Image 1 (tube, rainbow, N blue to C red):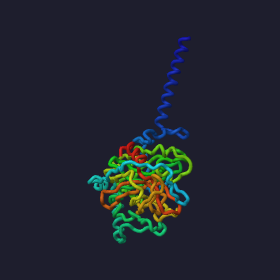
Image 2 (image 1 turned 45 degrees about the horizontal axis):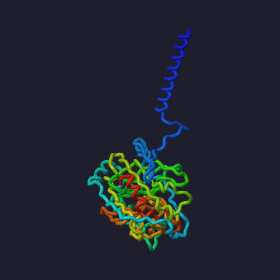
Image 3 (image 1 turned 180 degrees about the vertical axis):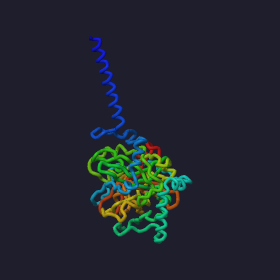
Image 4 (image 1 turned 180 degrees about the horizontal axis):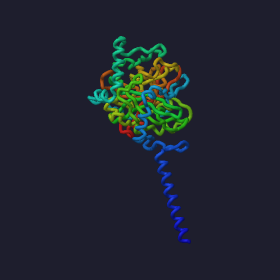
Length: 394
C-alpha cells in the first residue's frame, strides 16, 4: 500500500512539473501581457558617457512602427527655453585644448541609383515635386513666410521646399530623428558626422533630464526628409550615448550652464533595404576646441520661431539660419536665428556649401530665450563631442 502511494505521489509530481513547464512555454510564446514589466533597453555607463542600445528585433519593430504617416504626424520635442534677458555668464570653467577636426565625406558613388531601386515610390514622389516646382518657377532658397521673421544679424531660409535640392549634399546629410516618449511620438533634428553611421543631436532629444531621468525609446533617423518624403529610407538606432554630466544635471534648464553638456551621438543600423546610412548620405566633418566667433549655417526642422509662433508648413522642410556666432557663456555659443522648437539637435555647420563635400559640425541647437532671435548650443570641445565620439567610434 505504501509503495502504491509513493508511486502515486511520483506520478503527481511529474504531472505538476510538466504542467508548469507547459505554462512557462505558453507564457514565452504569448509574450508579455498587461501588467507585466517589459524588459528595459540595455544601459551601460563608463568613460564619462552613458548609452542605451536596441536589439535587432527592437530595431526591426521600430522600422515597422515608423510608417510615413507616423513620421509625418510626430510633433517636435519641447525645446528647452528661458525667458529673457539673454545675459552672458562666464563663471563656469572654460575648456581649452588642441584644435581637432575630421573631414566631411561623400556618399557612395551609386547611392542614388541604389536608393531609386530601393524606394521607387519615394523617388517618384520627389520627382513629381521637382516637376511641379519647375512649372511654378520658384528659385532655390525661398524666403520664409512672414511668421518666420527676419533680423539684421542673420538670414533665415526654407532650404528644401524646392524638391530639386532635397538630395543634394549637404541637405541629404541632415534629417529628422523620431522617437517615442511617455507622452507619444516626437522628433528632433540631427545630422550624420562620420563614415561609421553615427549621427549627432542634442542630449535632451535622447535622455530626459531631470523630470524623468530616463532615455526615450524607438529612435529612427530619416535623412533628407521633405514633407513626408524619405528618398533614402529610415534607419533605426543601434546605440545612443549621452554625457554622464548631462544625466547628473538637476533643477531648471539654464542655457548658460546646461547647453555645453547637451550633446549626444547615435550609431544607426541599416535601412529596410540593407544599406548603411553613411554610404547613402555622406557625412559632415566635426570640429572641436575652436573659438566662439564662427560663421554658422544651422540645419533643422523647426515647428516654431523664437517668438513661439507656429511656422508656415511647420516641420515639413529643412530650414537654415546663417550668421556670425558669439560667446554666450564659457563653452556655450550663440548664433543669430529666428527658429526654435523642432530644430533641437540640428547641426551648427561651418563651411556649408551646396553640392560640395565639405562642412564641419561644431555645435548643435540646445535652447533659446523666448523673444530673442538667437540659437544656443555647446561649443564642441574635448569634454563633450570627444568622449562621445570615442565611445561611438566616429
